[in-house]
Image (tube, rainbow, N blue to C red):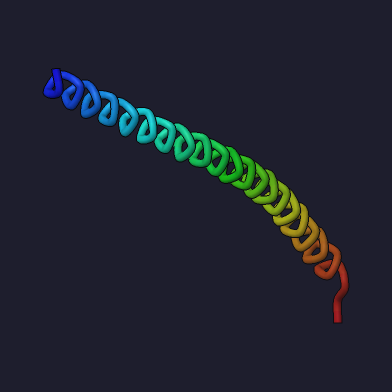
Length: 76
């Protein structure tokens, strides 16, 4: 009977270790998911900023072209 009790205790301890490990994995997975969401939001924000920069750059290029045309009208 003692061997059976010892075996049951070992199995129970092993099961508890598994539960603890699964809980740790769950915690890590949740933290990873949260960090992934933060990174995704930052990437979206950066993409929006890049689009704004592209629009502003095009506007400046158009202004430069217009200025060159205006300057070309002056003769020395």
